[in-house]
Length: 170
Image (cartoon, rainbow, N blue to C red; front, side, top):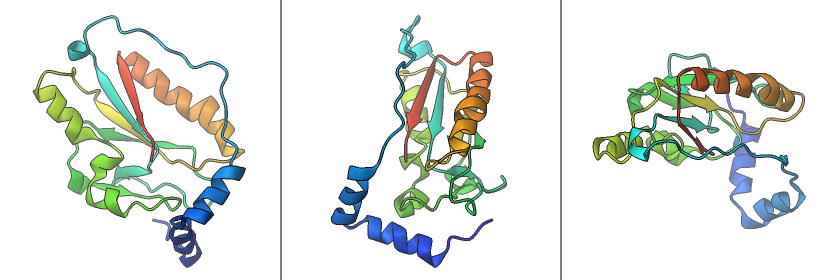
């Protein structure tokens, strides 16, 4: 597992200062998409198969860690079984303060909340796997993410007949 450097920790601490965060936000240029695919539900929410997507760098402790040594990020993803327990998860990410999510991984992958809604009959079953990516992806990895990794994950959930994909950004 890659180590988070002292500089990385300092950057996360500095980002908590409103002035620093606001300065960064003014100069940040988000990627814009001209078309967002949207499909109306064809069945009741209580019958829809659901998958969760996180950009928080959460993964099974037994998985290979995300690559923290590349300052441009890691465009790969990890599959997390829908029946996972919190103790089996860890977060490998250095670009946000995840101390709260370390204590409660549902903050960035709300699998237990989803189970509660399923037990109440509000939503349908979970997909076999949920998916986790890292945020903070820069070129050339952003192109790889969009053209390969995201396409692979989308192909998988389409084959598994998922009705709803919920993105939980970190």
